[in-house]
Image 1 (cartoon, one colour):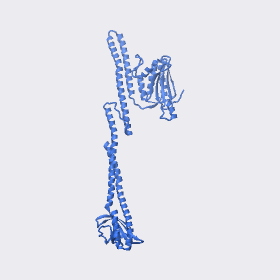
Image 2 (cartoon, rainbow, N blue to C red; image 1 turned 135 degrees about the vertical axis):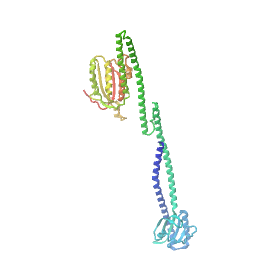
Image 3 (cartoon, rainbow, N blue to C red; image 1 turned 180 degrees about the vertical axis):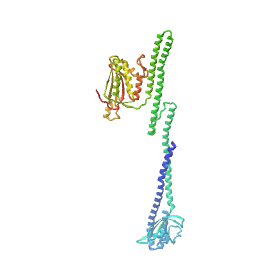
Image 4 (cartoon, helix red, strand yellow; image 1 turned 60 degrees about the vertical axis):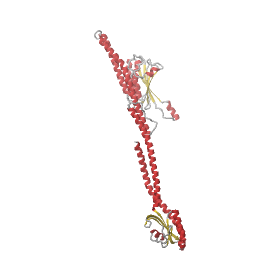
Length: 485
């Protein structure tokens, strides 16, 4: 990938240089040619002005002065100078040997045009010099009369050399640009591929069993930081799931060892008493059956806990108040058998976000625990309340940061013996029970905690000041609560 990125940088740079420099070289040639012609025309008019008096008076002894002037211009500007009279005969040149003095130039088209009063410029091939010439010829005027012409010629190669020098300079600039593009491409591609290599190394470590492998989120392009963040979330989730599975296996093996051992001992004792003490054997078998039922309850609880731990179901909007009223009605019959009053206290509706059936299971666990410890004639209250956090009111004044989300709390209040603050903090641990002889598997509140976690909710137990226990679950509100009777 590194070399592909570098090649892409260099290719784009080369394409841009070609698109720019090819038309630019043609433009430079045209500009340089026009510049030389303009310069020659200016100098030709200056020479024509200085030659006017000599041509007008036809003073031949001034030809040496004109020749010296032509040679001086040749030495300064580099162009060849030819000054002719009205007959097209050369009276002065810039040549050192002056052998061309008296030569007839009337056959040259540029001389003929200039003697006709026109300014002639262009290029043509010289049969005499065997080179391509760039020429400018201007007439020598005195009033309306033409007394001769001045021709300046320049080898076309001079223009080519000047343009080639500029093109070579452009080539050097282009080569430097390509090298810089390669360096920039190398630096950029190295920075990108280095981050990808770090991410690849972290992936390989994770695939080899190193659950602590994490990608660096602190540098790189936003897309790479986002990819590293997603990888770390995946690795964290995988680590959590594996840790939970290990803990689940350890807890299950530990918790199942006791009922299995007790069941085996009871069955062995019952087998030894079948022939000598049938009544005692029956008692042992009944105890073994109860132990088997307890073992089945533990297994079911463990399976449910395993499902809730790995749960990643999407959140949905449910009416907490409606569910609470329905569950209170369902528990009324069992509560009446225990001489316990159960009632609902809260608004008519209270929408919250939770995973499917989580609210029902949390509420059933709380009510089941409350009924198991509530004395006769006591009351269990299922309460739903909503609250706007204080930080939200502060934001209305200070306009600092996003407002916290409104929450809705579900509470189950009983009048039982309650728990200490320390026991309340441990109650959601797996297999924890307030007393060793308590009924149940000790998994109900652990399941509640997992369901709440999946629903982005929080759960808590707290002793009531008047006696009993307050079991709560706080959900994120999905809509405003509406008060009812």
